[in-house]
Image (tube, rainbow, N blue to C red; front, side):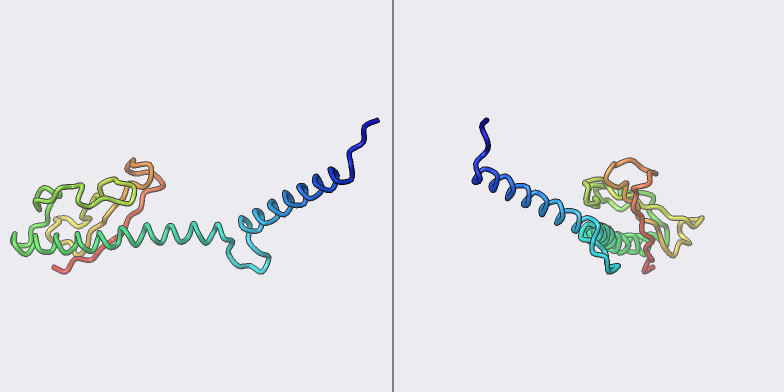
Length: 140
């Protein structure tokens, strides 16, 4: 009978130990520690959401300045589109490369004190659950 040598059994035991250690580290990173703190994965997901919101927020503030400037130069009239302000729509893209949309909820729009900036999210489709929106106050 051909039995594995002690050296072969030791190598396979070391390999098994390394695999188990890798699985343990992976589980720890995914589920976190038991002290109630967030896991590494939860922290990364939260940071990604914050960066998405920040990116849209910065562009929304720039858009608010342009809309306010447009209103000051057009007797308080609000623009209906980027074209009204002579802006190329792709000038304001979300982090997925899709154009940001904006709309006024007040009727008429000239009375609006704020507006809504909407990103269609990673799927690029409007009105789905991954959309990101932010309400922005107007300066004028």
